Image (cartoon, rainbow over all chains, first blue to last red; front, side, top):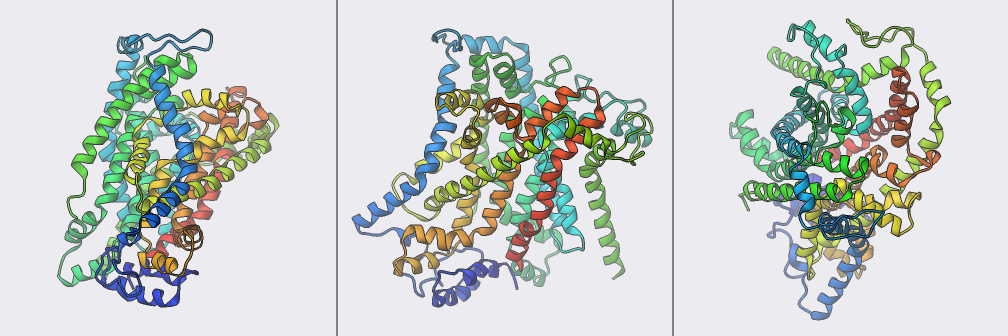
Length: 348
Length: 272
């Protein structure tokens, strides 16, 4: 039938669940389709205040026990996060204000590293380029959603198209660099195709022109990112209940109206998550730079984090690198907060 | 009926054009790798293999310990996937289905790691790994990649979709939280576990910066790092490099095309 059964299907498969509940669940969910938390049909077998909050027990002992269990479940993950995600940020932020080095004692140097990087042309270009990278966000999101709509059907062979669009995602960035190096070569395939179509008169140096190189890199990240977001949107599209669409068809809504009035509102949470993720990915882009241009020509393709990577790993100037990443984090936090504020789902 | 056929044709035409853009660089690299004659960069370029042979691939195996690289990559990927699925789903479960003090705080902290530029965490993580004397060990390569916010968020979402009745019923039957988690919840979110597992395996296979910092002995490199090694020794021969890149992506492509079936089947199954 339709997607409300999707939520019911696992229930019938659940090995541990008593049959009575399974039976009770199916019609209940069919009635309350898109909102699994919807209370009205639920309390067939469940304890009094049914729904999401039923795990909140009145007894203090039970609350404590649940709290303890929760923390036991969380502990291993939290320890690893603390050591490998929070510690680097905290300790790294501290080191950004020092002259840390393997060969001498560490001294507090205040804002010296920040003054240095903001006087440095490579870092300033890098920041500008990181912001320029934000142009990719609408392209990636609109492109990925369109792709997802294009492949969200049962046409013969659609599986292969899905695979084709996803293939760039599963490719190592170094390999991507090598392949697009071939493509962007002055005597490469891209120039040939463009010249055959009379779009350009002479071969273009995609990676050697200091204006074009940055856009070439952005194109490669677009090429590489589309498939990932496509799959996210595809999963969300397939979760849109088909009977809602059917009802809309009966009401005489055309395809376009159905897309904007049903699909897009249902996808809103996914759109928000994907947009924020791609904003952050854009601000933090640097690996494509490393494999395609290494910051050249004439330092025109530095990004904020590529500068950090370059200083930290290639020149072993750890404090400078960390100062640069500190600034990029500030940008990330600021823009993520903006996104959260303006893209928050309005319904509910 | 006729307009419908026309529409389907147009649909396929658009799909084909887009697919060509996505796949062409791979095709051209493959052509370069299996051809043995002619200039790679010439107008018009060759889009079809010229005197195909496996010579370039044999050359790759002769130059670098390819089998070791394969084995190392597989080992790292399998360990990362196993530990990530276990620890991240264990962390996601209470966040989705339990009420406890500090839940919002923990959730906020996990969200925060998304915003922080974890991309350069390796600068400090290397100091940490050195202090834990995990340099040159696979544990050192794997540990920092085991817990990620994206995985926890995806799995949390999956847990939230499981009907509360199932949990309540199990609680009434006296099942422990661990039993509910491992016997009821995990099987129910299997499609999402598969999704996270596949994404993780691919990520792990493709990562090259962190393993190249932690591992120093060439025969312990994973493939992604080993291939850069090839670039170093064979800087001039484009065809051998192309052959190396084909060998590097072949396993991910094969794994993806193979798993895509039940990956997509999981989603199709959800729709039917």
